[in-house]
Image 1 (cartoon, helix red, strand yellow):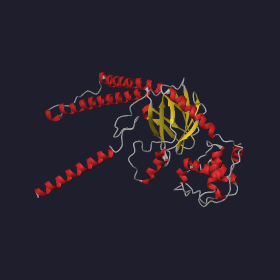
Image 2 (image 1 turned 180 degrees about the vertical axis):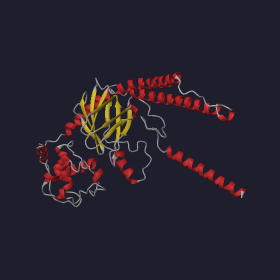
Image 3 (image 1 turned 120 degrees about the horizontal axis):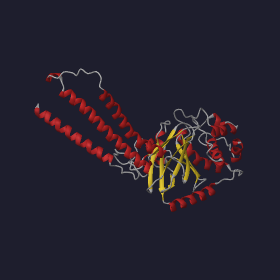
Image 4 (image 1 turned 45 degrees about the vertical axis):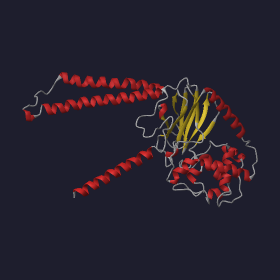
Length: 391
């Protein structure tokens, strides 16, 4: 019997060692991501802004203070219980009131609260000071991507959508993603800002509540439909920094990463020039009359970037999202119905409005859906139709 027990114990130890080895290997299958997060990270992200450093200091200050209070209170309590227990002959005190005790347990907590409140208030006030920003960017939350518009400062007029990289979505949907350092954090268009410049971020949302959060900056601000909130950061180190939507916003909540690329002032100027040239090259004449094949080709790209998330690449839809393949509004000869859906949304935001897309992009994606899968209507929508519908 003893031999069997020893063998069983040995097997359990071997199994535990093997499991630990597998867990360690799996954990190290990816590397620390520059700018965070790190593998098996327990502490907060390494800070790259003054606000983030202040938040780190507050975190440890509050933790240490609370531990000291905990140890002191429970130490005194357990010491009193043990030292003055009835079994060694101690009798309970007979007093009912003590001015000294009343003053002590009023003044001491008050002092502790003040010690905690002063540095916390200073940091919170600094967080809200968005004045004198050198760059202002609006971050709009969509289900499920971020839209960025450069409103003021160098780069004014630039705007784009930032969406999870399609290869990462494919890995996630496969159920067996390959080990990847920046898994579900890679986007097609990162937010680019210059180093050592005060950047004001204005947040809002198109559909439901989102939250723009980058831990390395010490920034987290809700993006609420119909409201405008703001926050700021001044990144002190060039690099790539990551965050995610921090408000549960629907089934694709995990697919709303934030990638901020901090570059030098010179590289930022080059990026701005490149973006403006690209925007000028992509600018479409809303009066241009497109051929069916051209619109379908253009619309396929727009659909893959914006619509396939919900309606699927094959147009069949999934769950609460209706299929576009064979949909009545798509097949309807009255193209105004589908135009209205894309411009205004429907079903209380379940289908969001897509006014942020250009006239050509909306015309192209509608034409694509009307002439893809089993939808062979031969119908096409011109950018001029969208321009008219916007009025």
